[in-house]
Length: 68
Image 1 (cartoon, one colour):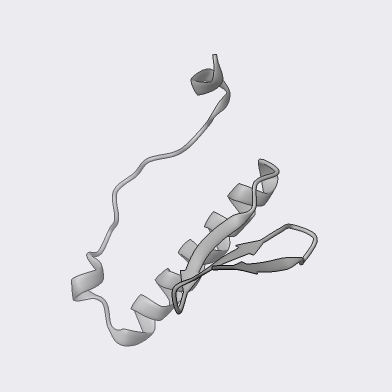
Image 2 (image 1 turned 90 degrees about the vertical axis):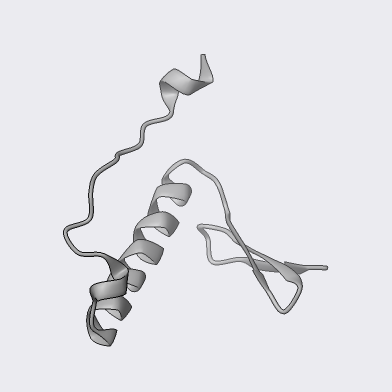
């Protein structure tokens, strides 16, 4: 079963993003982005997001595709 192969972790935050200073929030956001990218690439999946109504697809080899 596919669900058995997917591993993820859950936890609780020690501080709410609403209560973080600007510097703390920026560091937390960068860490989340980095860990998400690393996790997806470890599964062989691309990172997909949207900028200016365009789909951006990043692959682990550094290739970036833009689609409308």
